[in-house]
Length: 170
Length: 451
Image 1 (cartoon, rainbow over the protein chains, first blue to last red):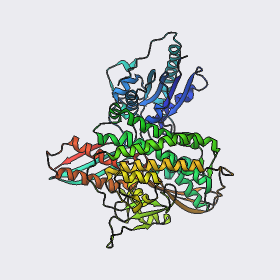
Image 2: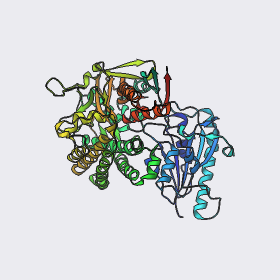
Image 3: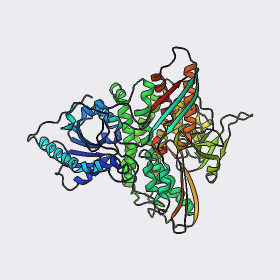
Image 4: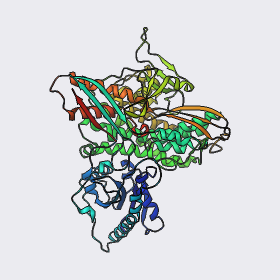
């Protein structure tokens, strides 16, 4: 074993659909292989960069807006694609996930592999509970992430599987 | 798979929707006739959530208002509830609270300085470009920030939305040996913080002046964070050349800081005795600079902020980045002091029995003075809650500052600015104030009307 598989559910459970990432992490507890780190995060770059080592495989679970949108639709993104998509900072005191990846690349702090599994959200108001389209998509998202974890372990053990696309330069 | 198609995903609109703001500028015949800052978020939901809850719940509920400064909400809520119940928390428990608050200051201020504000001065569109050009400074900022994170994790139970804080104190207090590893990191962070002050002091600062009153907590003898009394520094010196600082008892806060609704924003807008006021780093430095830790005071002097020992005041919002760096130095030194002197309290909390009463408190969130007031029944059920965050107070002053800066650009030499230049100017001006859009209501859609 050369590294860990780190699964990060990014989001805020108190913002309805934004809680999908942490919900996936919660659903995977007690059923992931040894050497898997399950955690959630608010996506703040300083903290995100501290969650992985260079030799790790990182799986990020996130909620996205897409244009055109289709709430509940699933996406899988490579880190470099996510970083390329980073636009201007969307907040006065926070960076977006794409910028966090771009920052990690600039600081030579990217993990060995990084993929983003995402679901399109629609309801980000204050409160608990996912919107029906996101709640309906959650089992499939959990399956995708569980499969990604298994494949990442296989690759880290060197027993096959396609390498994840990952370019350190964003 | 669906993601292999040709659609474009815009990850800037990911779901950390902690706030939304926009600016409306109207320019008629070369004059800015309107500058309206729109804040869409209705934070008042939280005040309604709190009514009917128990008196032990506000620290956990209000910490959810902001992912950036949850400790400020927790500390202010705790103090307001305790005052309502006639209880004072002091000694080592109060020191531990201050340590946790220092952790949040270190984390929040260093993030703003290195990743959000500094790129403006260095001509970079974001921290990513800054990191590509000068990796060491961004690494330094992250190192300082992670020291703040470590304090939050150790004392608060986790780095975001701490869970170890409760009315009356903590669920668990650390043994000295648990805090000792933090001291090592803080000593490194102190060197990093001093280096940061020197770095930002070398930036090029445009001329700008905020000409209204400052509002900050004041606690003679120390740089107020979690203690003291609100104080107002007048906008101008009196006939004798002295600038007055007047206490504003926290019980009278709402008589002076009056909120009103405006049609363009769901956040309430405040005025201090009818005038726009500023709270935050510049206000704190003006009111309490003389009580900064000596190393922070020396750093401020060397950075060209004047001598805080003699009451130096900085009114240039662009220079707020220097003041923040000085404040990080202070918070690091203060955290070290607390850890070095720490003796565990006999109990992790004091009892806070409820009573039918009303009480209020204020503390210094990284972005400025935060006020809470609660009323409760005899059994501790909350019957009223009021929360006045710093950004709601600063909203008018920020809009005025935007108006002044845009007008100065329109009146200045050179080609007339296009919308892109004005947008960049306004965004920069807003970042000078580090508004917590998330706690008063993502940024920045600009509409310019030209007549």
